[in-house]
Length: 70
Image 1 (cartoon, rainbow, N blue to C red):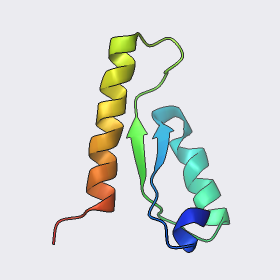
Image 2: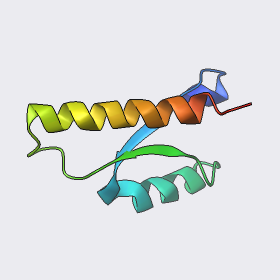
Image 3: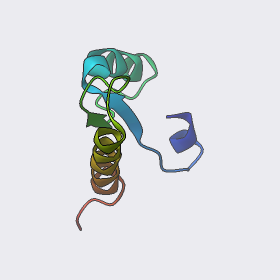
Image 4: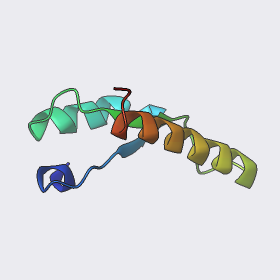
């Protein structure tokens, strides 16, 4: 969020277990409704293939968040 305040586009990536906490932090930092890329939880026990799928999902979401349709 601080990067965006400085003019650098950014996307937060969150696992589904931490969405509520991230939303509370965003509100506390003055950006309620801040959009996040959300991937499924957990990641610590994911296989390499599952991690790659989660990363691709996060990239697709980030693309939509950073480059919304005209």
